[in-house]
Image (cartoon, rainbow, N blue to C red; front, side, top):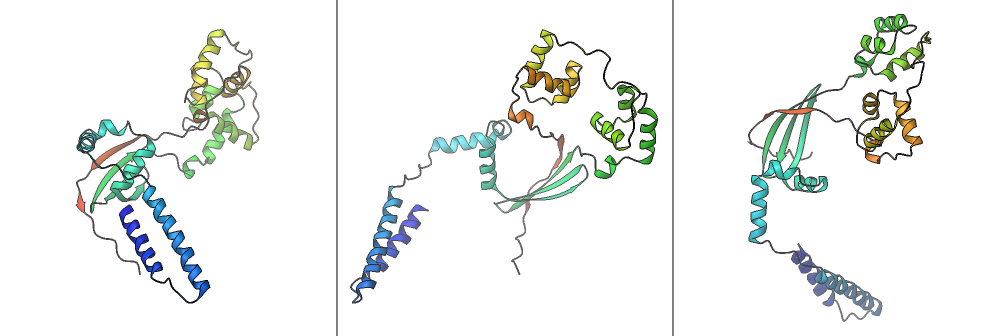
Length: 259
């Protein structure tokens, strides 16, 4: 690439020098100014470090990497993985249905490969919608049932969603949402909280581990001045997925020219 650029710049320089000797002083000065700029660009290009030549050791490392790709891939940073994929993959075509994805990888060598992936799909908006039957059940249970009874009645919903729906329906509780006596924090509880809170563990999981509410966990951590790492504060849901089929290579048909 550098040689090609250098050739282009030299050709440009030769062309400009051939125009020298003009009777127009302003035009002559313009040519000399452009020649100076081109010579500066040529000098900058020549001072750039040349790429290191490929050695036999480099080729052997690539062979080892490809032969042990499954183990070596996990050792690469995400940035290096993306760079490598950009070198090998032309594009990926996705066709997805609920819980199933068919990905077609188009390789730059002119082949395409299909991959069937099954993943745990989340609930759709329709499924999260409260039905009339669920609202009636919540109206019956909410006033006097315990938290455990309510969770058991709506296993597909979290506690926050149940409380939110009850408030929207204007329902009132006749039993306490929390135990009548607060559970005292012990030194062991504080030590366990300090250990778990700095890890990438969801707060609701920590709450279940310590047998406390989410607000209690967050409040105690704030009191103890336990700083939660940024990556733990913005946890993303991890998808459980499995590759069902990995088909062989097929010759890719060229893209149709744009109209």
